[in-house]
Image (tube, rainbow, N blue to C red; front, side, top):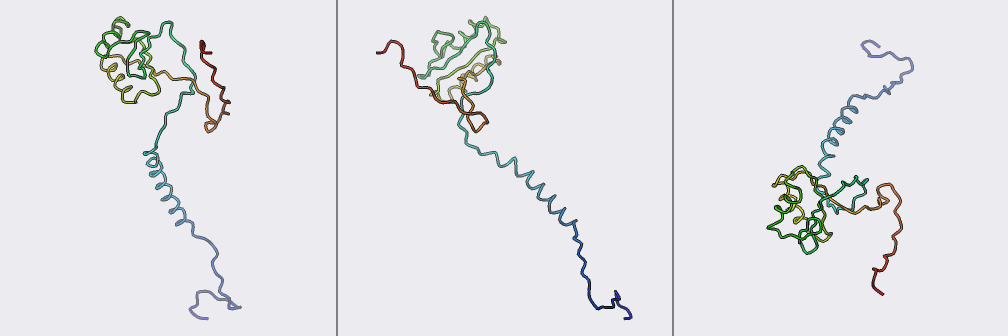
Length: 161
């Protein structure tokens, strides 16, 4: 056969059985880049219900200063309820004007989140930047890797028959 590409005695045309890997790698790299860009965007709109804290509790100072927001939105410093107009001046008196004093902010579960943030903003504007949030210790739920503790029945309050 003159001018033929391949001379074969039996007349069979052998097919090339090698795969071209370069386009496959290109497609995989493009998919990798698409997922790397899209993954952070998928966590933007997540509805959150804040649980009780399960973190290891920090050691308490000898005489902690608690700022408490009660269910009726009254503010208490220590055991004394103060008016909103006297709030910052009472904090300054209790801390002796020391802005580096750590304050512990706690709020009733029914207090709106906006009220808690308003108190935090007032403290920050007055220069109190060391504010800790106080929460109840909770048992880690099973979806976080720890077994749930059985709920104990509530004990009747003392003094009630």
